[in-house]
Length: 195
Image (cartoon, one colour):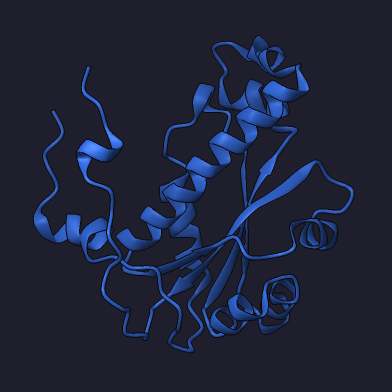
């Protein structure tokens, strides 16, 4: 039986965690990004397909390169973050199934249909992007997820000649803005059913 997290941990992961729009200008060691990935990769994906691919843009040149494809508002609020992460999905994920699902390497044939492959890659890479955010928060970082960017242009820049597609972007670091009051969330009765 897994123990319930204490209130401090729940607050750090969910209750007081906020999307951030301004960042402490700092360079974090590469070990931080390795730690975030080593946590997120342990999150579940269907048949352990793990289609998520992550580019941690940490240099000024890399951040400027990704910011060139963002809306002006998103670029302005992202460029000072220690990392702008491109969360993407690899449509060729099934090639790794013999390594990732070794008890049934033939499972790679489950994803022969292009629609099944696309849906599986998108759904599970999105999950892995959420795991990235929880992992970052767990190690004391703030997050700024966003989707306001030119996907076709960014993919042509970063993923030309591959079968990888971007999914969304997320800034990581230590936020310095004062977030406005938390926006409302749907009540259980408006979003859920118990049958």
